[in-house]
Image (cartoon, rainbow, N blue to C red; front, side, top):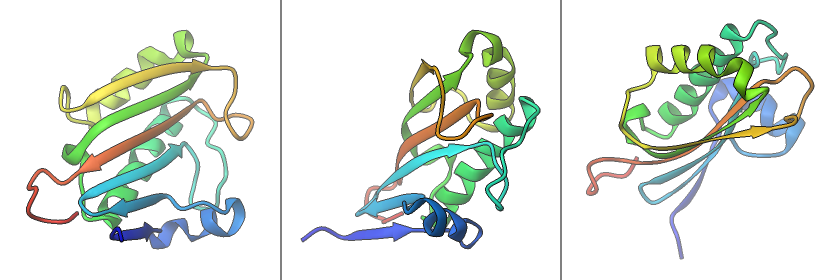
Length: 136
């Protein structure tokens, strides 16, 4: 039997109630984070591109912290971008401000739309606690 724990930060209880999914699931020392988007705790989409990009990172940090991890524990990250060529310079600038450079595998994919109108990016990742003897 696997050691499986659903991770729902208190600030994200609305996600489970409204959308029916967990922000993350921890299996042993591995944390599988659902895609995080640029919206408020009340699930409102943030309009200005720089602000939702920052909100994505804050939301991702919140999920990781609830699992006992940090950005440094991320080993694989996928970002999904609406209008990628238009918004990538701003996304990269925000990413470089808040996320450690060169610490994980990263794939970025252009998509036509995300789950709700107005969302520009979704960040999904897998984290593993760097100390393999300690669970996240």
